[in-house]
Figure (cartoon, rainbow, N blue to C red):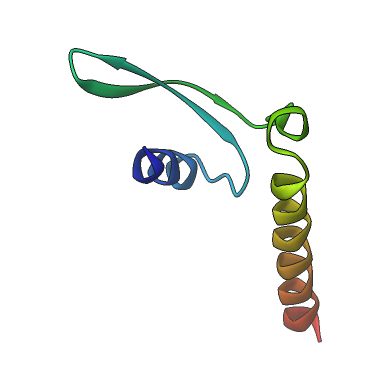
Length: 68
């Protein structure tokens, strides 16, 4: 599942998104991609939010280094 989600996100050029999968006849299919996923905090606590902040901070630092 993770491999499909990562490939889907990369294909559409997203760093953060939610990929909805459905199983049919023992195969997984992507049925929807959400660019504004949620409500992760309700179900997973702050782990996902912390990872988003880390990812955005890393991207920001890289962009800042490119500008200098």
